[in-house]
Image 1: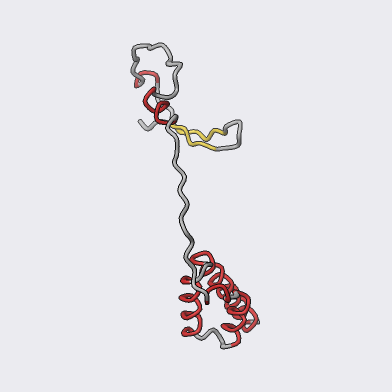
Image 2: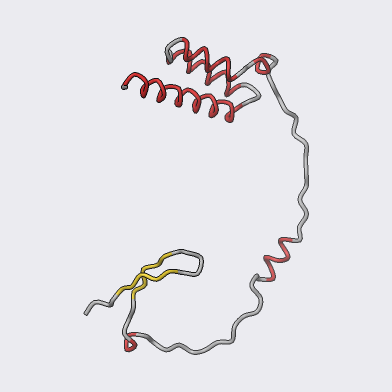
Length: 123
């Protein structure tokens, strides 16, 4: 015979599917007193270690400071999303001081512009 299931909700709004067993299927276990310590002593000792801070020099190209994402995205849109232009921009941004974050921002703007253009032409 299958055990019945029931949906229950917690006090914080989470829902759970609970599978009930009959009392005969539940095994009894030996009772143990609760443990008051929630963290092993070794882990506490490791938390007391101090971190060392070091300074890393920032290397940047002199050309990379000139990059402007607004200008680059406008240029890509003006060239009708030329893949060579977009690729060149992504490589330049990746090598600039904007790095990965600049490349992500640029690609998000281009993607949004493409989807907006597609919506306009489909109307």
